[in-house]
Length: 237
Image (cartoon, rainbow, N blue to C red; front, top):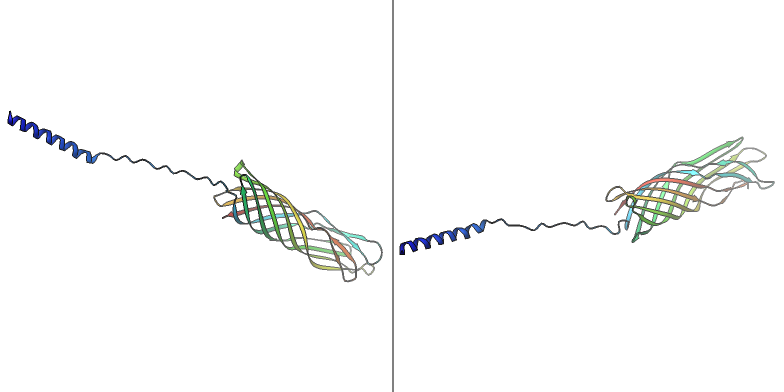
């Protein structure tokens, strides 16, 4: 009985030891960590730089001459137009779905026109322009885009030339002049990557009226204006 009891005790101890030893190899279950994407609540807020390419369509500039004596007369028309490019930089503030910002831009390109009417020749060209725009609008759910209106001011330099060697009505208007204008427009901007956006814009630019006088005293009124469509890209910081 004593031997049987000893054997029984040894058997229990061995079995218990195996049970505890086996617990060291039990699998460890780790709780997975889930990463949540943080939504940018103000994707249109911040600084950006970019560029555009577009085309100026002329609104028409009738060339009339006011001589030193006698009645005024027309000699032709300027339909100044052409391709233009610009570089721009700006900053925007976003308040919920409303976005507003300022933008500075410089532009230039082969925007010009010329005419010949008998012995009268005329030519004009936009040399360059510097502009400041305020753009304000709303975030649109379609393509996560931004739709906005534009108001701005611009200062441009033009070449303007109207000449004639007619001895009865000689003309010698040849000026490079700078003038101010205003800008009104509409635009659309949508993301094409995390940092890059694509823009499409229409703008109306009016430079008002400037009186230009030639060496012989004859004068004319320059009235350039443009209808412009542009495509561009912005890099958003």
